[in-house]
Amino acid sequence: MAALLLTGGRVVDPANRLDAQTDLLISDGKIAAVGADAAKKAPRDAEKMAVNGLVVCPGLIDLHVHLREPGQTSKESLATGTAAAARGGFTSVVCMPNTSPAIDTAGTVALIRERAAQQGVVNVFVAGAISKGIAGEELAPIGGLKRAGVVAITDDGHCVQNNELMRRACEYAKMFNLPVMDHCQDYSLVTDGVMHEGYWSTVLGLRGWPSAGEEVIVARNILLAELTGAKVHCQHLSAAGSVALLREARKRGVPISGEACPHHFTLTDAAVAGSKKFWATDGKSLLIINHQQSTINWPSYDTNFKMNPPLRSARDREAILEGLADGTIEILCSDHAPHCDYEKEVEFDYAPFGITGLETELSLSLMQLVHTKRLSLAATLAKFTVHPARLLDLNKGTLQVGADADVTVIDPDHEWIFHRDDSASKSRNSPFFGWQLKGKAAATIVGGKLVWSERAESVAA
Ligand SMILES: [Zn+2]
Image (cartoon, helix red, strand yellow):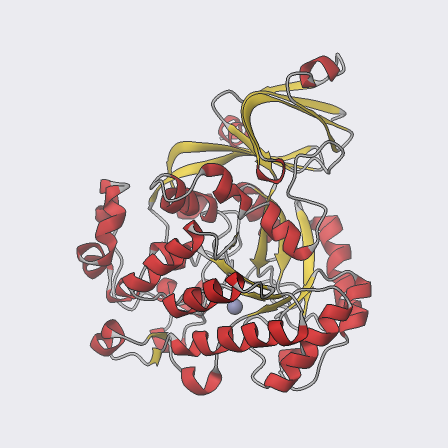
């Protein structure tokens, strides 16, 4: 495909403050023109795609994804994980290093980049580990990882407990211009908690994971970002206190940032008590968006509602939404964490943490932020495009002429049901099967190439 002209769409490019109904021309894998003259500049043989009524935006970026390679391909692979990303509207993902072995050497980074280039359908960027083997004891070779191409370092899934080691990680990362991303969890406070510590953990008799277990580390990270000047990014924030700490620190100009995942601002810990309890209490506010949801049932102790950090109270959920609305939290992501059925089909205590998310995160974000009028479409899309690109220093997330032609076409009003059989992921551990969702990617274009489209899908089916 040499040239592709998208006509009549609402082009929303937060990086360039553009929001207008106009045309977009892609040529040789790059953005060639945006605006009224795009059609004039198109070569005669350019392929045309009419996107009237749809949104055209920079390709979405998810900077928090577990692709499970190397070593855990029964859960996911680069091929299936990136296929799920394409279906969800994502043109770039950042894979987490808690694989087997961990991504803590230049050799492993090279291996993933090579395999991703061969098997991936979207761009895969690699995050390297902070510590060797993600053991939190000794720093990984951060300079070598940077030379091998990592875009950030993190021990995600784990959290460096030793503050002095974390300080040194920040100092090295700053030297190599890498952001430090952190899964904020204080082990001494959380111990073996499996759900949010509160009313429902008491009722259900499950061990609690208190909000303070996250907030203590967010506070630590703010202090270390201030001390070292390194860019520190707090992953998957779940607690109201974390948002308050971040808001205050960012006001002072501390180089700290945060991200939120749709499950934390859609669900609450009441979901662990089963659908009846959830819809009767915290789920009520979701029924305003869609009254049909109340027919979706799940039992108590359903392990698809077990994640780390855990689903929290309705107050925490509201605080995360407020943080997203006022710009305190400037990045949205999925924490896509695939697990096999047999791993999840055990008692709540023994199941692994995590859910898949690439195929539902855009819809849930649009529902909770845009359709509820908490945030504009452009401001929401900025959290999937220009903001993550800026944090990671990626030459992505923009429709600037000359940029890589990574483009997502979205139908924000498309109502659909997420069916178990429709997922491209190798795993099925999502709590959102059967949910009626509003808003969906209609086409995903990577480097000028159409890698997924709703229309092609329905023609094929
Ligand atoms: Zn994590």
